[in-house]
Image 1 (cartoon, helix red, strand yellow):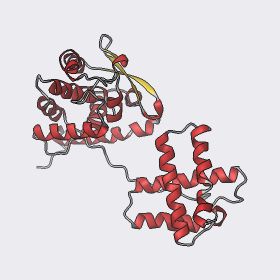
Image 2: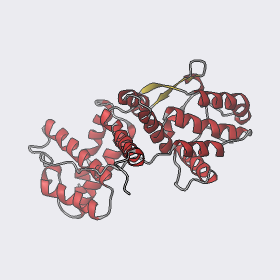
Image 3: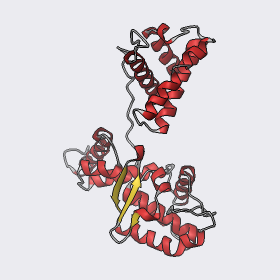
Image 4: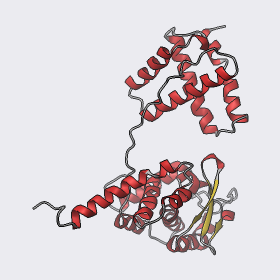
Length: 305
């Protein structure tokens, strides 16, 4: 048996364990598999190990260093480190190893960048660029309104279905990461834009193979994440905005503007669908930046002469 086969032989059962016993998402399984197979390939080609028992802490460090020198993003390197750590821990618990080479492995720190947001006037410009009465223009206006009003991810917007939209009560139910459902309010203007689209726009886009998705392509099919990104970028250019617009920017703006308006962080966490409050706390840094700007602008002792 070739060394690479020896290393890869234990990966499949581990991924099956993640799926059946831990119920982790397909994306998580794919990411973990990619990290483990890359390490197995690196270890084999560089003759570092022929079995998992041969792997040492030094090998793990060399591998992560190799990825760093290749210019790989810190977030990806962190995924590699986490995948190796849970894999070796699993093998140790199953008695397939006698020692864990990742026992003292520190997970690389990721530099956290403040999310880029739109100001309220910039959002208005974007909405104005989506004005029009054609089916696609009504759709695009409803998309922008809903992204900003409810903070949906692009994937959640693409998967949003008619049966989960209650315009009478101004709520939409979406399926987020980990197949978790959440109920999110829909603002008045977003509700009105959705009503116009559903009454005058969507019926014109319905085709033979149309499903229950709210937003349809010109062929009557479900929109893709890529198409939503393309639409937002095109609308941003039409609006004359200098920054490249993407759907997540409206999600960031939704959260930031709520926080600036005095909304509780826990409420924002719930609406965004964050599993951990620490993820939502990034917006407190954005809000702090906003406060410092206001302080410099309006406080007499903060301005320079």
